[in-house]
Image 1 (cartoon, rainbow, N blue to C red):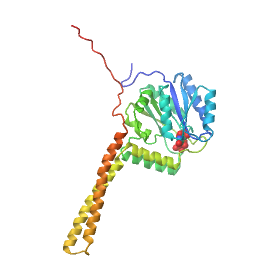
Image 2 (image 1 turned 180 degrees about the horizontal axis):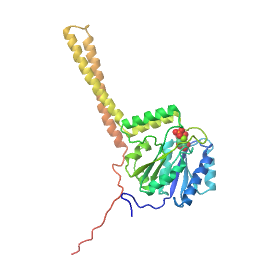
Image 3 (image 1 turned 45 degrees about the vertical axis):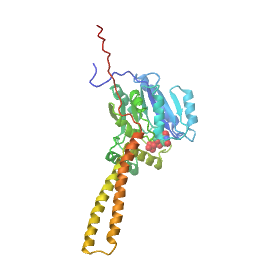
Image 4 (image 1 turned 90 degrees about the horizontal axis):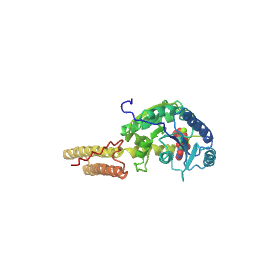
Length: 331
Ligand code: UDP
Ligand code: MG
């Protein structure tokens, strides 16, 4: 008997999509750990024949690509997609997922540095078998991070929630997506990509798996401060037009303030309390400031609408469609 809401599943062909940017120090270790895990899962009957590790070389400038070619030529368990340049983590993941969905029933994205606990895969698969289309990996704590990264991360997630994003706190891009969810993701045409914010807005049954974060196996972080800032800004501006709204709100406040100040300085003028010219100067500068910001807010509102329209996002995603042709009543 099937549980309410669950879907019938067969053991999936699983692809691990691994973005790599200048990872020559760690890539061989990663290949053996990730490959070993896939072999074990397949022996345990949890994944189907044909499952693979798919490395996505994101325009590495070191020996990563050479190593990847060697790894893939020795063992059919590994495949390599190499991008023409460095497009960044998010685009690398997307390229891998979009390629893998042609062959896989489920795709898990995971970093090359083995920081994310690969043993959590079993629980990802359990959720998939129970009917989830998306499974989010969420890190247990931030012990391994410095105080700076911990602080900025907390601040960032709070800000994102304040701005209306559905992003999950402490979910990096360690995530399982079914073929169905990937096909839906392919409908999103936008270039300004923030997967963590976008995927939760798609819907679909989903679940969360908690895992521990380890220190990097080798090499150093490829997320420079500027890459992190870009990701953070993309996260906010790609999902929300609230910052534009804030200008509108600010404009309104300044407008009201300037109106009140104008009245007050007129009153002062009538009482003969101020130096000549003060009232006119005040009124002119206040009104110009207030009206400018208010107008900017109105324009911002329209720009926001245009921005959202240009993304050509699907307005809905159909999960299942049950349809039965009625028998014709022939007289
Ligand atoms: N990465 C990538 N392109 C980039 C930067 C990073 O594909 O431009 C990959 C990188 O090789 C790694 C993953 O993204 O597999 C996460 O990067 P990293 O571990 O350096 O980030 P951190 O864990 O420090 O946030
Ligand atoms: Mg890392």
